[in-house]
Image 1 (cartoon, rainbow, N blue to C red):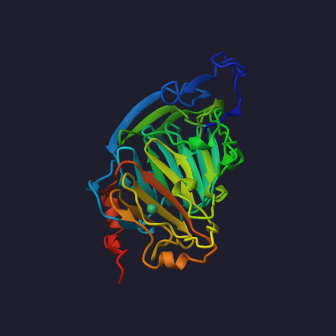
Image 2: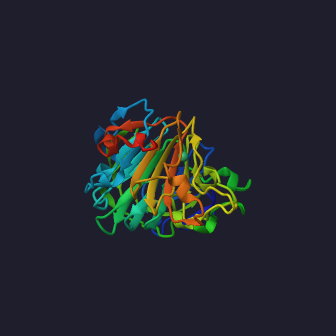
Image 3: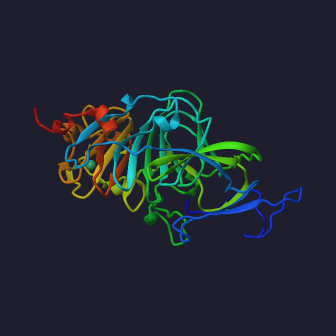
Length: 386
Ligand SMILES: [Fe+2]
């Protein structure tokens, strides 16, 4: 998060003695990113955060690849992804490359018996269905339909759901996920032409602190494996922190669309950026107002990026037969565009209610076995005139 946040108790000067009421020390931890060059946070713990007690097991959660080199457009029926009780087991990687995993998940139960930490990747969790609370060692965030939850790598977390009916669209990114640089000034403040501002980004305001000893299981993801590591102190034992590296939330409903007289290009919808992909939010908006405007997008050849659209709600103007929970994959190398009739239908329309999340990756995506279970194999022929 590119601005400063402080929560709980911290000493007036960093790297100085911080004494508990009983005379013991609090333990400081510097949590840095990109070595010492990226955003960092200084946190203060009831116990030393280094007390590994046991490493119980190690197992792979790497995706099984069905198609490594792909030139076929696919539609995936996301809501056919099977719900699972456990959060981690529910996460199904459907598309992947060396920079990111694109994941569908339908967890039924809150994470109870363990904590989770991803050291490989930042996680962007989009809440399509469900409400609850993201609980982290750096504070909690309530979530609901339409929220993006940004969990930087290394943040220890749990997800509490209010009901069993949850649908998540998750992107794991090996490179840090930031808001677009062109919307920030040289101090990091969001500029006037940004489609969102600081007030729209929700920081943790609630810190849970447990000074407990015992056996605490943290499932830690590293290099595609999960390591079951047992710690001797409760992972949520932070009494305070300050800095720039912490989880935050942003609702897609707070994204203010940028519109124009003629069709605006996808970057106006951009919400997040990394070195390896962008994330865009397509939200309800007024259409282009040139008297001869064509509201549907033009055909385009995304020669050097794979395009993934996750359909959330509303009628998607450029596609026929697309529903909530569907994913379309339009691979780099061949043009795609509106389905037959969609361009013509769009003329004269004044607004759209579509809601969708787009992930454009700069490297091609591999299609996984999990994707093939919910794939529409004939989608690639859907532009044929019949
Ligand atoms: Fe496109």
